[in-house]
Length: 237
Image (cartoon, rainbow, N blue to C red; front, side, top):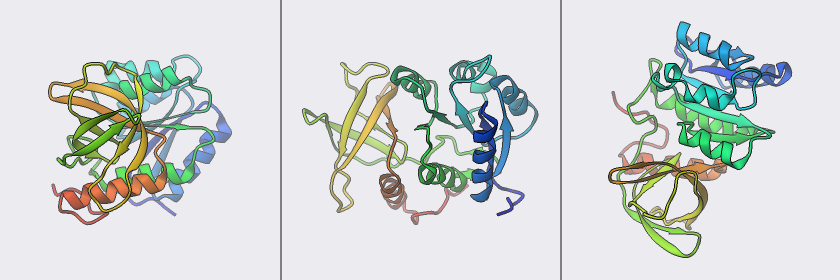
């Protein structure tokens, strides 16, 4: 499939030539426009010189690491969403990547169905190369969230990539919990793993980790229905 002129521009940052080529080919098959970089330094030059909508970022790179790249003010200020990909990253590294703003973490070998879902989602919610202000559409909806089978929290809003809950004093940055989301959509409770991404004044924001494609699709459908949209319709400008 040849990308259209307004296709999502995806920068793939991967130091293994074979993996880089395979990911670029897959991104192209999805109708997106791939750009490749073999290092974080090259990736930074690219985002400073041409439009980029999404970055697929390996953490283990020669020279500057993927985490160091995420810490760069010159990159962070651009607000480009990042999907981290790695086969050997530790759990603390995965948590730090999410804390630094990555919207998802995918382990190698990469589940291509999951990557396709993420890129398709971002394609829908991108307009002229710029994501809407919250990166992912959220629904202001309240429902119970059971945590590790012991506590019950209250969700404040939800996106297909994470959930905001009422402030929890004991929750610390990088903490991983298993959530049971009682979505009011008529289906069974949804079990997901999540990591605390950031704390805001009115709640804690947790990012979902290694979400299964059917669960991602269910969350996307539910969020769009609550927002009064069809399952795959973009936000209105």
